[in-house]
Length: 550
Ligand code: ADP
Image (tube, rainbow, N blue to C red; front, side):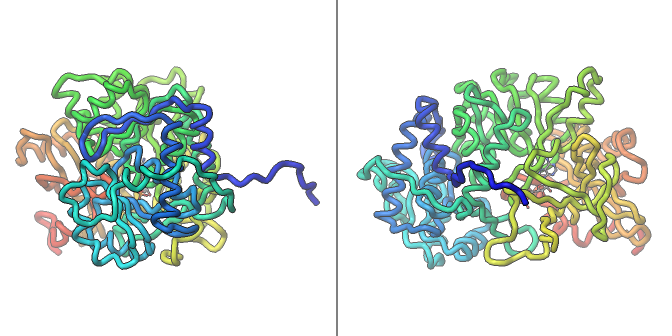
């Protein structure tokens, strides 16, 4: 029998993170580009804690929020959204972050499914709210996240945020309760079927933040100056709103302006050292830097995830702008962190091409996440750097089921979550995703990695974005169709097609070459900034490869 240890059993509470930041890093700043005005707002952690306590009082006394209630936010990254994260979870309620880019019908569905009692929203989303408010029966209060002077012409609101908290006392004793109590709720984007809710706990978010702060993960420390461009409605902005105050890092919140010029201005103005976001954001910034001959010399590292890091992007930022690109992999169900790419001592001395190959992997497994790779029959595959299979994970910040029951098939009988990704692992714990299970192109019994094919195509100088999808083929079951958005000023012509094909010949195995290349004027981008393959499949559903008889 094991011997019970004599250690305190203190519940892990999210509110403790902010209490710590206010006490030990009270003068460290959160800088926000205000969503309602574009102006820069500064406030330190000590002041943020005071305002968060005012908000906690207002939630309880004015909005009658009780333990377990769901309170939704439809908002950009800002100091107010940060305060909501802490005040809502701090009183024992649940922050339900809603992605405003989703279809309004889906938002109504989510708020209803979550039975949200109150909704906090940025002014920019006022028209959306006016359109859906009547249909949201559970919502008793709508709060506009600004002050009175910016509240003109907004119909649906109970109060502005500043009016709500302004008359409240700044003393509040954060209650201590079960660390397994729900703290946050985020729905997956629901590209197949209804969205599914992931319900995070105090324990899972605190442990995840500790893991983020390891030096090979985010680990910027108190000298760090972090800008999450990844929205706070996208898997807790990858945990940064918890990890930064825990370590005392400065936080820079970009608000509603995520375009190249605005990001550049904020990075330069605040001397940001670490930024995080999806590849489409970094493509936008890169175009601006290249065109205007600007630099971002304060930036040391970029955390990039959500979809695969394109090789051309890696090379552009690292070789031309001296920024380290660090790829990460995860998902809503994983809080989101699973792997982050950081080189090992054994990689010292490798030549650039070998390093690039390693950096294009999704990264090394983070401690706390257990992983196995299994074949179609559920048999475990070796970590030999080539045996591809379905990725299953488990750990203290991995969902054990979805909120209110959906999606039970994603959870195995022996306690693992099936991610829906296909990957191989190498002997150093580096993961290489070859596809999402539903995106692999199955051709003649073999699998083509749509990610690798897209990545290769993105290396062509005329290609702005590329997506490979499997199209039915009478002989091969499926063959790849490459859909391309060319860069501004490039012609959508046969010559461009030929040139891309010719380029790919040098990059991928012959049998991977797309059977056809089609152009789109604008790639459909989903609510989390990724190419929407479902939409592309819909657009090309009657597509037939030229010269192929069905
Ligand atoms: P969804 O895209 O369904 O909204 P998430 O935002 O949680 O869900 O995204 C999770 C998925 O995004 C992963 O399962 C994986 O397919 C993909 N993904 C995340 N990071 C990477 C990466 N670095 N490389 C390739 N795919 C990634």
